Length: 247
Image 1 (cartoon, rainbow, N blue to C red):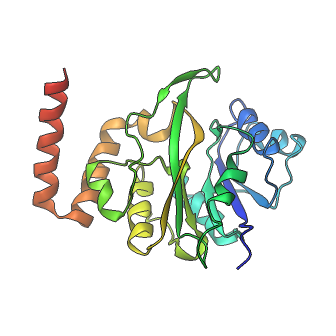
Image 2: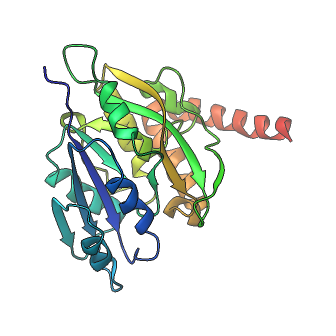
């Protein structure tokens, strides 16, 4: 099998003109070019779409219309993508280095088939693109669907799923459907590859951070669905104890 995977980079936006430029520049800078870029815009009232059109990034798909929220927009991206892998790169986030996708493609060199999932690490940056820290939850050496019992150990943007393994997002979850989505992808996957790369720079202003308490409640419901209610209760008690011990 030819190991030259195509990456579908899906960016969902709504009035993101002020933050999207670093995202676009990091796509332009990639040394690996077997990619397609999909902009799924929620009908922005600012000049987001114009900024993207003028950036020089080749746009494979451009949708700008009202949607039912972030995950509805992501579903539109999945439905229109044609690549081997899905990459959800939010406005404001960026690839960590110009050779990230090239190195990720190289991780597909072994084996008869493309891996089901590629994953790696995430660096957090501030509004000035300055490094703040590595993401608190680090990617485990080995990953499977049970791993997320300990929390979302891999950032959504650093989790590349093969398109033929990817379901649609469950729109019953408004803030944390990505957690549920990743678990469902992993349940259908056998070959999950740790790239040992820092894949993305994550801008610290995500939707779930803005609605932190509601996001945590949703995450609890998702974990209870996949791992059982009682085990999830016990694990969250341990999370609290651990946090107190660390203080």
